Amino acid sequence: MLARLLLCPRYDSIVTREDGTPLELGRGAMGVTYKGFDIDLRLPVTLKVIIFWNALSERLGL
Image (cartoon, rainbow, N blue to C red):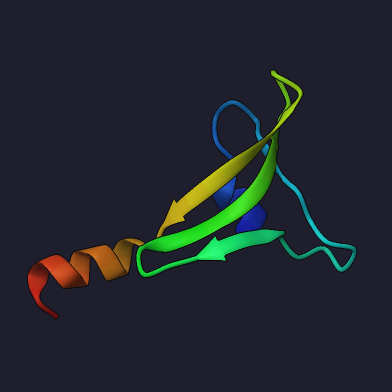
């Protein structure tokens, strides 16, 4: 399910571990970075996912 949410219109894919979980490169206050692969360019890429609720709650002071 997570992989489906992270796919972008260019059909990038997320690199997964042997157990099928996404390969996470880093995590911070605003989001998570995953290792991916650009199918068109045939190159490794990083996919940064912004955690919307954290950003919104900070702006609203929640």
